[in-house]
Image 1: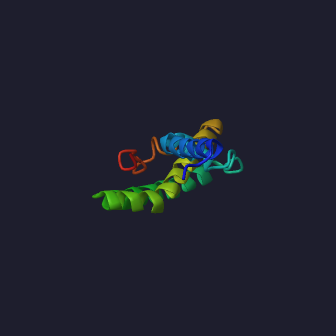
Image 2: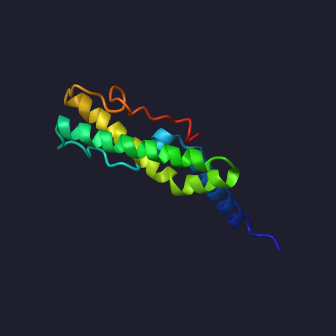
Image 3: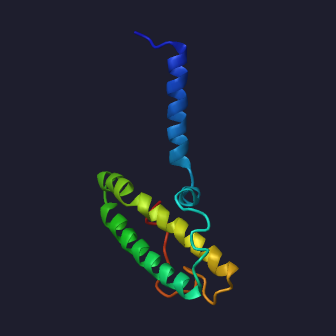
Length: 124
């Protein structure tokens, strides 16, 4: 039994959308998961505290993803369990950086905060 042409086109379009979502950049996904202007009401010390907390959680997730990434099943489970939160944290850190720059804070979260050097190598 063959499917009607309209059904085949709909399935092909759905598959294309799913594959396009897989190919989306991490930065684009991270921006999608975070509300713009989330940190507008924060002052510089509050931005620094939030950046430290986010950086610590990012490092924790990177460690968990690295530990799980030894085989394909581990990478799959890691992608489902940890990646969405990791991308959300990356988006939050981007928003923190923007807000810190706009408020001319003396630090740039993730750039000059010791111990907040997150890497993309674990995620890719």
